[in-house]
Image 1 (cartoon, rainbow, N blue to C red):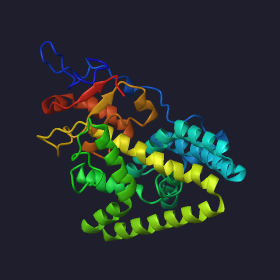
Image 2 (cartoon, rainbow, N blue to C red; image 1 turned 135 degrees about the vertical axis):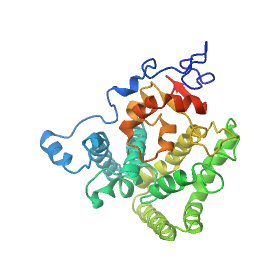
Image 3 (cartoon, helix red, strand yellow; image 1 turned 90 degrees about the vertical axis):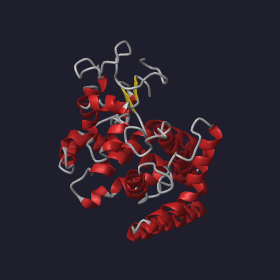
Image 4 (tube, rainbow, N blue to C red; image 1 turned 120 degrees about the vertical axis):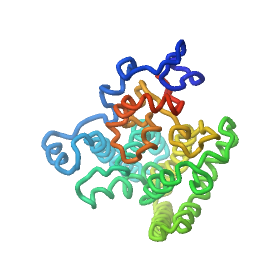
Length: 319
């Protein structure tokens, strides 16, 4: 049933349980207009920037990072300059509403598949821009691309797994978020070390120390600016990140918790996908984490029989 959270299992006709063919399934995500960025770079700059990306179909990722660079960074500088709580609050609310979701998903897919032809430029978003959205620089790849996807939401190795929790219990979610907020600083490098990724563990500890020491110095110099630009995003950003992961892994089949078709769901035919690089296709993403974000809707449509065979969960028109 379109828009229902209770009866959106597979793409089947409830009258005869016949699996709908590709031609019978309407999927507006296939050709919808992208909404991840607000404005293009000036033409003279756009021509130069295009040469920096490995694939032209990743220009939406590039434009999203460009928007943030020319809006968020100057605005953050103004917060530090005015040292006003009012200016800081306006900055934080605007940046969160306009860019938080878009940035996290641009970071997500660029971390999986790469974006730039230059290794140095590839470090820009995960080491620099992340700090403005509540993620210490240099941490995201280990937490998401390595731990989450290698361990596949399986407890205890995925330390952000939703498996141990009663996922319709708000207090369980609060525990889940607070554990991440407080303990991830130790649990993430410990995970990497115990799984034999010692260089990643050392890098994580180094990045965490740099972030914490930087925040200490910046707060001493400008407490108002540091609070609104870095510390508030660290707190609320962690909440939003964990809410996202909790939501995407809220339905886990206890009979097949390691199966990609049973540990998450797809959400199709919703404008959310146009703002988030098709992030609603989360089964598709877990089946092949390096599949390009533009290919997710098509691959879903080409594998309807597989979804039916697995009795996978698909929401239609629901964010």
